[in-house]
Image 1 (cartoon, one colour):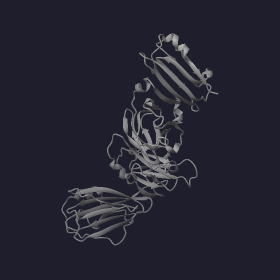
Image 2 (cartoon, rainbow, N blue to C red):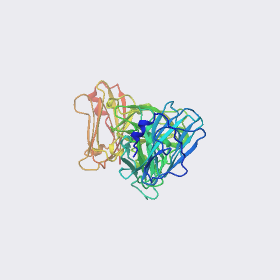
Image 3 (cartoon, helix red, strand yellow):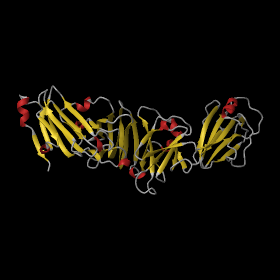
Image 4 (cartoon, helix red, strand yellow):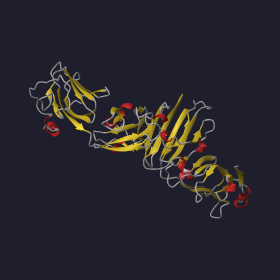
Length: 491
C-alpha cells in the first residue's frame, strides 16, 4: 500500500516519462485508495493540450481525501475541483510546487486538469474514508459552540426541540471574535442537511454563506464537521429558522470578558435586522453608547433588547426610540452572557463592553436614567437569580427615584431591599419587599447612595427603572430627607 507520507517524499523529485492517463470511467471505492494519474508515484508533467476530468463516486457513509500536488509553470495551466454542491474552486498559482489536502463529501466530486504550456506538473493521492468512527455531539437550537471543538473524529448536530419535526428548519450562523482577522478555516467546516454524516447531504461550508446570510436546513437537524482537523477561531449558533428568516440580516458578534466592541449597525430600508451578542466567558454587558443616525424616521424607528437568541423568543425588555432616547440613559447593564438586539428603521453607532469593573455602572450623575431587571428575565437558567447594586457618590447629594414597574416574588423566602441614605448612618429609606408592600410603587429620596438588592428564585419577575437628579439646595441632609420620601402606590 502506498501511503501519503511515502508519496509526499517524492513530490518535488524529478519527472519521469510516464503517460498522463485520463480515466474514462468514474472512480469508485472498490479500491479505497489510489494515485492520479494512474500508475504514477510523483509529480507528472501535464502534456500540452490536456483536458482531463477525474470523476469520483462517493457513497453515503464515506468522505474522500485527495492530496493534490501541483507545480504550475504557466498561468494558462489550471487545476480545479468541484464538490457535490457543484461549487468549483480553482487552485492558486503560488509560484512554487504546492501540496494540499482537499476533502469531498458524498455523493460525488471532480478534479479537472488543463495543460496549455506542457510544462506544469500534477500528482494526486486519493483515499476513501469511512465515517463510522466519528462521534456525534448534540446541541439544541438556541445554543452555540466554539468551532475549535470540531476535531477530526467528531461532529456537532443542532436539533430543534420544539414544534412539528417535519416543519421545523435550522439556521446556522457563525460569529467571529471581535479582535480576530478573517477566519480562513471556515471553508473547512462542512454543513450537512440533517441528523448525521451518513444519512444527510452536505449543502456547503460555513464560509460559502458568510456571517450575515441565512443557511437553512430542510429538516429539524443540521450537522457540522471539520474533516481537516484544523482549528477555527469562530463560533457558530443554531436557531430555529422561523425565528430569524423574517430579518433582512442576522449577525452574531462574539467577545470575551474585559473586551470592548464598537461599530455601526442597522438599516434605514424599513426592514428589521437582528444581532446576537455572545460573551463566551462572562455574564454581563455594559452598553455605554447608542447614537441614532440623523436620518431615522423618528415615529417608527426603534432598537430593542431581549435575552438569549431569537430561538428562545424572550420578551423584549428594553426599547429605545429616537423620539425619547437621550444619552442620559447610558450606561445600561445587560446581565446576561447572550442577548439579541433588533433594529428597525434605525442605524446606530454603539459601544458595548464586558469589563470586569462595574464602577461606571454604579456612578451617579445628574439626569441619569436606567433599568434594572431580575437576571432570569434575560436568561431563565440564571443561578442565582439575584443582584446587588449600590449607586454612590459620597461628595454629592442626589434625588434618587426608583419606579417599581413590576414585582412578583416566586417564593416566600425571596426578598428585595431598597435603601437610600447618606454617610454611614441609618438610611432614610430602608425597605424590604414583600414586607413593606405598601411602598411597592415609586420611591424618591435624597442621599449619597441608593442600594437595590434581590435574593430571588427562578420564578421572580422584577422590573425597575431609576432616575438620579443632582440636589444642591438642602442646608441639612438629615432634616430634608424625611420630607421628600414619596410613594406612588400601584393597585
